[in-house]
Amino acid sequence: MWSAFLLPRPASVVLLAAALLAGCASGPKPPPASPRAPAYARLSAEQSSDIAIHALGLVGTPYRYGGNTPESGFDCSGLIGYVYQSRAGVAPPRTVAQLSGFGAPVDAQDLRTGDLVVFGRGRPSHAGIYVGEGRFVHAPSSGGTVRLDHLQSRYWSGQNARFRRP
Image 1 (cartoon, rainbow, N blue to C red):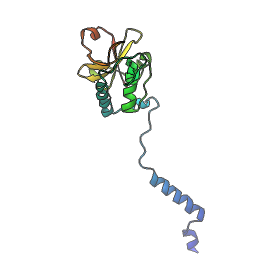
Image 2: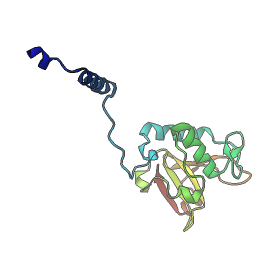
Image 3: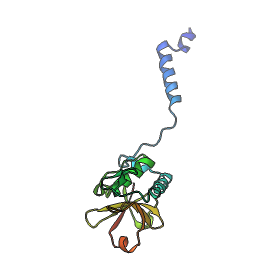
Image 4: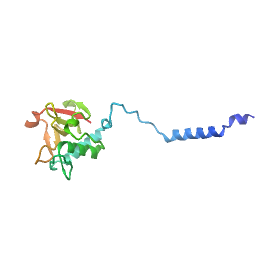
């Protein structure tokens, strides 16, 4: 008589087994993403460093308006898109105007490798990737090549620079 109460019914056994298996299959769950934190906000310091190193490796690649690969050449936003996509799996916006709102603003004293440098008074006109020690990589102009410049150089220090952290 007691055995009837101690033994679970067949449907209960199936539900219990399913619950136990589901519990075993799911490990610890990551914390929920903030609705205000897009995927690019999760770049690690290692990814940011890798972005800077890859950008440095592209110095010397020819400039080409609308270009976005090493084979075709780069314009400034094409360079940024290529590097971020290939090193972090992130597709930033394609235009400089859109890049000026990508990620979060960063103060100059808080820059780290992989941050974006956006230039322009009012309307953004140019962008590059910060690589450390006051330097950035960018694709500056028609007829030129991707190059490394210093933010404090005579020309760039006179430009209105803003910084973004994807």
